[in-house]
Image (cartoon, rainbow, N blue to C red):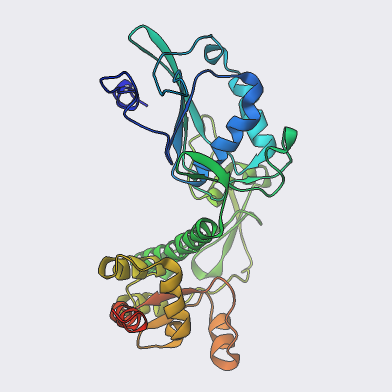
Amino acid sequence: MTEEEFKKIIKTKADGRLHKRENTTLEFKQNYHQGSINEYAKTFCAFANHSGGVIVFGVSDAPRVPNGMSNENFSNIEIEKVTNFLNTHYSPMIEWDVYEFENDGKKFGVIKIHESSNKPVICKNNTPKDVARESDIFYRYSGRSERIKYPELRAILDENRNIEQRKWVEHIQNIAKIGPQNIAIVDTLKGEIEGKNDHKLLIDTKLIKDIKFVQEGKFVDKDGAPTLKLVGNITPVEKIEVEVIKNADKLKVYTLTASDLYKAVKAQLPNIKQNEHYKIIADNNIKDKKELSDYIFRSSKQQEQYEKFGILQKGITSVYKPEAVDFIVKSYKKDYEL
């Protein structure tokens, strides 16, 4: 957080009160108290499950006046202790930063909580005084942190599914661009790399742990990290067969992911709710209509099970033609007599 961003938060009106109120990304406190980690952690979790947020210390409650902190507690914040508490009671990890500012000779503290990239953040162990219990999920509503309600949890789960679908589509597009004959698959669980002609290479088991970052979806630079050591040209190993060419051809026709489809429908129907959108898809069996949608199968076996027996495994991605947008818009207008 920059000083300019901080000053915008504590900007006051003529009567000395703040312009801003507590909301989905902002909370005010007078002073920081080490004994209140339990309550702060709940707010951390709520912000992380929403879109991130900040807690500003040095603002009185009633009225909301930026009169500065009245003690040195914030300057002595035990970051390691707070982090340990969060990691003990919540998962996945909550990312946060600490800032100190001065304004008109008054001291302020700010804790910035980042939006989680792996929602939902969940309480995994009961916290003291039962402020949070195992399996609790907190979410930031306007000016308050509460246990999440169904619509918000459903939205998080839907977005997770959409992210996974987009990743599969991106992988398939990249494979099609590079050419399946030029692709190698890294299996960090078995320590194998399968490449051209189905030959596989073994990774030194001592190095497996150092490349686990691949599973997290991002690369982490580490000073002094060992060079990847490859040994041998071993016998072929069976892998999941990805229908690269077929799927690449599908994506030229079925150009919309589930997330893209909803955004396109929302652009024409601003008032449509996500559950209404998915209800129209389900009620009209849009996913099974080839003229509107098709499935991205990750193997010929999955496709065969579906075509022969109607068995559709979990996690199969649906893609849509642009015509699906018009179909949903017309269905919505008909159902709601617009």
